Image 1 (spheres, rainbow over the protein chains, first blue to last red):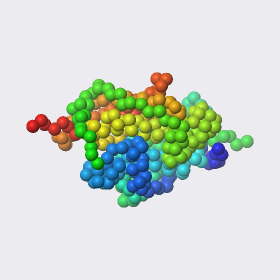
Image 2 (image 1 turned 180 degrees about the vertical axis):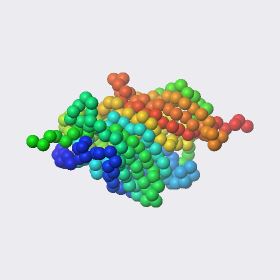
Image 3 (image 1 turned 30 degrees about the horizontal axis):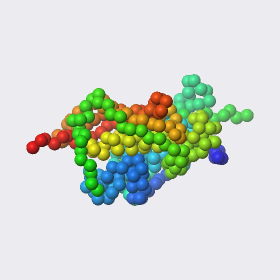
Image 4 (image 1 turned 60 degrees about the horizontal axis):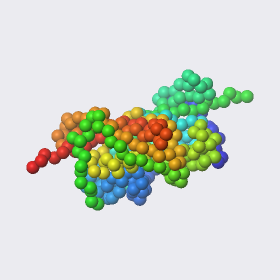
Amino acid sequence: MDSPAVTTWWEDLQPGSVRELGSVTPTAQEIKDFAARFDPQPFHLDEAAGKASVFGGLCASGWHTCAMAMRLTVDNLLRTSSSMGSPGLENLRWMKPVYPGDTLTLRHRVTESRPSASRPDIGLVRSVWEMFNQRGEQVLHMEGHGMFRRRPPQP
Amino acid sequence: MDSPAVTTWWEDLQPGSVRELGSVTPTAQEIKDFAARFDPQPFHLDEAAGKASVFGGLCASGWHTCAMAMRLTVDNLLRTSSSMGSPGLENLRWMKPVYPGDTLTLRHRVTESRPSASRPDIGLVRSVWEMFNQRGEQVLHMEGHGMFRRRPPQP
């Protein structure tokens, strides 16, 4: 499988840098399909059950929202980066329900950056992801750690 | 949509209580299907790319692992509980890669519990989820907050 050329190395992920990672608009069918497979709670599967719930309508599994954020992150940052994966996340918050037809926009901000103490070819980055709906309401917050290869020395 | 009877209320989720929430064995096809939709990084899509990666083989997206844990939680705890959802998670850790054919077993432990200060019909619970593979290696850790309705007074 061909990999695209790396254009974003650890050095390019400076604290304070902000990237817009695109947007996604889940359909009712996509919300139900994800829920049927991974989160079959009634308010994620059925309009009437959603209406009767505290959410007021069919809404996406929080894990579906995270998965959509990941897809945008892969497409618009990781695919052309030197990412070596992530050990985990902090402070994941599902702040508002996501409804069918909502357009969700993802923003990525680097908050910390440091070279690896043990591996000179790697740097560590801490980032915040924030997702907003078309009304400007934040629906998702998460903070993640990432490992990226450092830019190779120029010959 | 009929809801099953509630058998687990806030009062049943006492600190220290441990629940085994079942197990799941993802196939290579399921790992690739999830990745194609939500996390199309080469090592989640293709055996050869996985072998060439730091993971040493095709492995599941961390979000797929979380989604599988959610499914076990819904099937074996939430479906028959008074759950009212979760505002979020802390300390999510992907500790080991998940490979096709791994059998993942999920354990849930309640760590804290308190009544809601503002709503007398609701209680709050903090829990730890731990997922292990068939070799006893932990692959996932997460800590979550949940809201549950309190047991109604007996007439």
